[in-house]
Length: 133
Image (cartoon, rainbow, N blue to C red):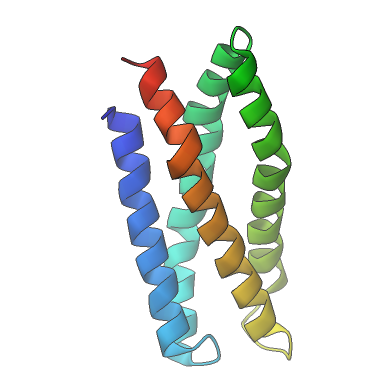
């Protein structure tokens, strides 16, 4: 396994575990909110690493690989949507976690991230590994 994919998978595991901890603690609790704030930096750094190191290499390969291009095209909208959800969530609650929509917004964030992680690991990471053999 490449160093990049190994690191991204490790970060996925850590992010999902932390978000599940937030869910268990409750997003409305001080502990849950503190835990979520500790995840924010690593989550945003992780998304940036994928955007800088993973996706450009996949897009370059897709120039000569129609199947990969089709796969990336399918993921493109979802990836943008997930990044938007993450940034909007943290922007909305940058001044503090409160409001009637907090629980719903957190569930939306968790669902979007879980789906993205699953899809990336099942398709894109395998494709990246195949390219590096």
